[in-house]
Amino acid sequence: MENNYLKQLQKEFLVRKESAFRFGSMGDGGYYISPKNILEADILFSGGISSNTEFEYDVFRYNKNIQIVMVDPTVSRTKLAAKAVLRSFLGKSEKLRYGINTLVFMLMLRSGRAWHIKKWLSNSTGILDCIKEKTTILENQKILLKLDIEGSEYDLLDEILTHLHLFNCMVFEFHDLDKQNLVLYDFLNKCALHFDMIHLEVNPCGGFSKNGQPKVVELSLERRL
Image 1 (tube, rainbow, N blue to C red):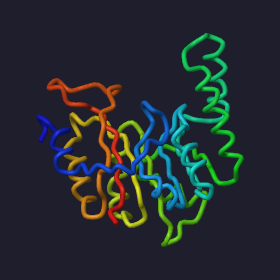
Image 2: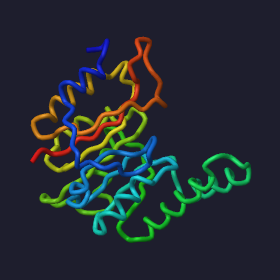
Image 3: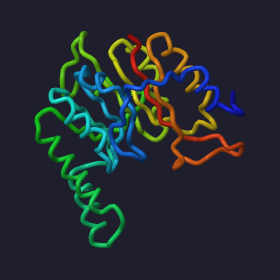
Image 4: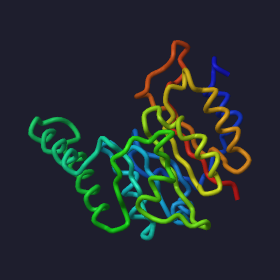
């Protein structure tokens, strides 16, 4: 599979859904999800936001009752505001987008149903531990999972598989596929009994291997009915 792992993943796991829409950015940071899965979710766990909160805000607006836990140690209100001001002062591109994302981040935190945790996600700091810091997970609740944490997503796969019953939809940005494609294949294979991969696309920002295979892909998994 290592010579053309993208084609193999598409062949074995991809089940396209016409009902899926893109939530979040049109470029990096957006994901395809069926709207009903957002409406049915009780909690959005978002690992990795950097300066882009467009996905979180789309979910926040679409589901008026969802609780959102955002985890990223590199982000704060002050840092986001400083970036927006600095880009505006230096005349850099997308300065308006940075400013809007800063305001959106603050708006969500003030809503009473969104929280930010400044921690690195890892084997010792997991998804459920972070959620339980801010809210209660009931057995019948559904979690929408988003992970874009620059390669650390592999540290959380065992936890996800152990608690797979809690998730109704999962979106990922998987990195370093030139080295980790077999790990991703194994994870998707274990999810396949209960989840369909409804979207898979290359993120060209991550670069390509020597044989032209992408190092980074974005994908969406939805629980099978």
